Image 1 (cartoon, helix red, strand yellow):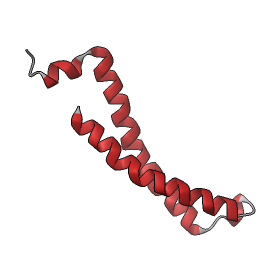
Image 2 (spheres, helix red, strand yellow):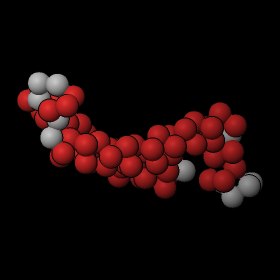
Image 3 (tube, one colour):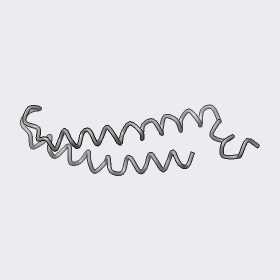
Length: 77
């Protein structure tokens, strides 16, 4: 389960920086059509990092609710 937390953190740290840059680019644009190519490139990276991070969080919640994570951590004791 620690690996899932590590994966989530490793994905979301760059996502925060990307979100700030996306916000700045969106504020500077007048409309969706005037968004620069960099915005679309960053959005693809944001999604590519967000999907595994969200999946890991979802798996963490499932492991906590089903208590399977405790069994894995304790070596099935």
